[in-house]
Length: 401
Image (cartoon, rainbow, N blue to C red):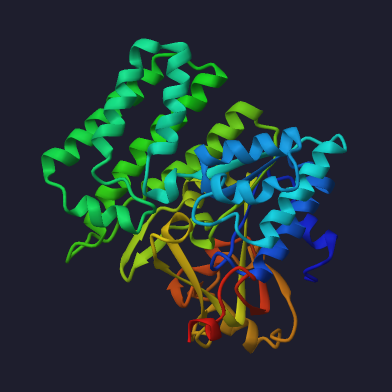
């Protein structure tokens, strides 16, 4: 299928209420540009009313308010700093998409922005807890002390991101860990007693984010133990699926949602954390719930360079980015299959649904590696580009030398 043909996109999307568009790594210029074009088409031509991104739900409220109020041009840098996690707002492609969505709203359209993910780049519950505190100060002032207790209990592991936090969490004794979990659980139960009105449901989702983050740290301890089980849970993916569910509950089942995240979070089948160790992805839960109303479009490329990262407390969100080379296409991968089929010279959009159930590629690019996945079962369609390269804000390989 021709990748820039609107009819091809329409054929893949159909009447699905939730369309997920992935990428094999974050901070890639070509993926950001393609996803921006696809989102613009889905919003303007197909009536999608919610754009949901793999970034903090708590932080995303700032971006949504900017889109609806029409903030100034200079505010985009402010949004990149405070409205996103994992440096998801740093690229020119994402910032240009935000400007386009704002202009759409100014012209009379209605599109909302929602962050899908845990707060604080997966390392700090503070943004979500602060939102809960503001809510309780209005609706249940007697319960504000529960938030203060949660902030105090989680400060022992609160960090810039989900790379640092597990290190701090691993140094805690069982009693300190259990106290944090119990305090967060009490807070969630308290917020749940407020009822099911819209404003309460959002506060409950914030409280649940803090608890899911805490549980994710417990899961990391299991995952990186010497002999992890073959099936684990990712509370982060559970939460992203819960966010999509909340969007649909609040906006109505007829609202159409486009979700942007890593391929692995969106694929319809469990994600491979480590060789022989899998966890249900957000897409696994959504596919089970929505069936054909959930369409997953993966993004990958045959060659080029990609984004690498390192922990660095001096950088935004504690993450320093750099450029790394891509390895060759792995045997058995979808990328190798595209090359073998003679489609390596130009972008291609593959509709995989007609081949579902057949024997097909068993791996796809993930950052600088390939991960095991039944590609035909995991994706409804796939864009494969000839090349990929990090966005302009990522230092080049020459800059590292």
